[in-house]
Amino acid sequence: MENTKKELIEAAREVRTRAYAPYSKFKVGAALRTKNGKIYTGCNVESASYGLTVCAERVAIWKAVSEGEKEFTEIAVVADTQELTPPCGVCRQIIWEFCGDVPVIFANLKGNSEVVTMKELLPRAFDTKFLK
Ligand code: THU
Image: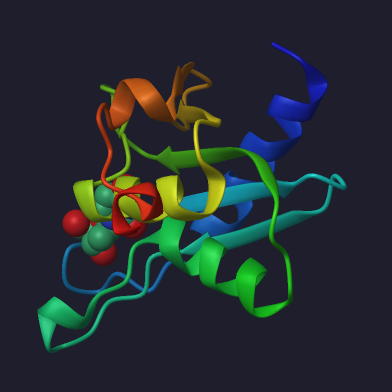
């Protein structure tokens, strides 16, 4: 695996330690690379009102977009599961919105990883092109 992907996984692993997940105890970290090579990270943040929880992937995207970033090249997601954890359906829609058909890296704490494309994760996506 390329060093840039390893670096992204490492960033997602690190931010995962700061996940606020007292209800599910399921900690997730995400790291997003911009076209210029900058990395934005996010962890899941839960709420006692469960439905208000925000996933790690969206936290990373909200952070990057709110700092003015517009172009992204890849995203990594890290969780402590044997079967590699993919982004949830809501996050797939949001990743598609801001990143398009980028590679998505799934990784766990044991050093296993896999790369899939957003198109594989969200075929026939609804997006802005339908709004014309
Ligand atoms: N979660 C993420 O942060 N990303 C995913 O891809 C899957 C789910 C979070 C949401 C919630 O805090 C916890 O994992 C359990 O669903």
